[in-house]
Amino acid sequence: MTRIIILAAGKGTRMNSELPKVLVPLKNRPMIKYLMDSVVASGVDLSPIVVVSPDNQDIISNELSEYNVEYAIQEKQLGTGHAVAAALPVLEKDDRKITNIVVLFGDQPFLKAESIKKFAQLKHDALTVVSTFLGDFDGWHQNFYHLGRIIRGASGQVERIQEFKDANEEEKLVTEINTASMCFNKDWLVKNINSLNNDNNQHEYYLTSLVNIAFEEGLEVNAVSIDPHEAIGINSLNELQIAESLI
Image 1 (cartoon, helix red, strand yellow):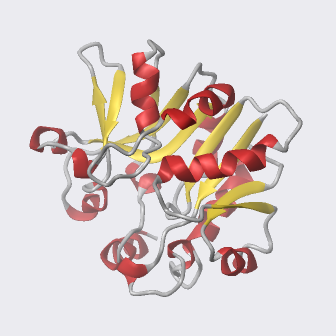
Image 2 (cartoon, rainbow, N blue to C red; image 1 turned 135 degrees about the vertical axis):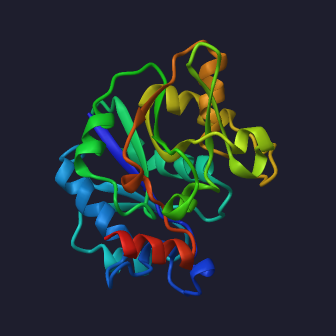
């Protein structure tokens, strides 16, 4: 079976909002609700969806009261890898056999149910990443410029994901973008999550560093591509305006 984790710990500071980022309205509706509807429609996880939030859990749980949700608390925001690690104890309480864990981000409202279902059902020894291909960063594609790049080797295999703030100028030219959504083999994730370190410019525990670990173990990391419209994330007022223009 597959379980779903949604990361929702971001603050709305860059949107001039005191609300948690995932509750900032998109066309008068909290952006996370668009994603929640897609998750429910996918039918992938009929168990409670695990939402990772900081100490503003109450306001998020009030907004999501119509959904089947349980919460994991990320007391300190130390990165996406740290957030997933905070969610794993909640999943460990499930005595059923979990094979896959899908990690989604609450600030990506346009992800479709069909896409969630597609990559949640994949079989892998380690993980599958979800990417999108851009020809450029013009127009609304500018929403993707500060996201991580998919770095492939000479064979075409995914070797790593380079976060923008750690990328060199050549890597910033890559237009295959990491959308952030990932699907893990549960046992492999549990085994390797504590191997992450924060030796990077942000001093955060990047979930994407697990790609490097899998590659170094000689495991194949596949990338499933989705349409750029589905992959849009919202992290600023400008990106919110662009997203509203595309609805």
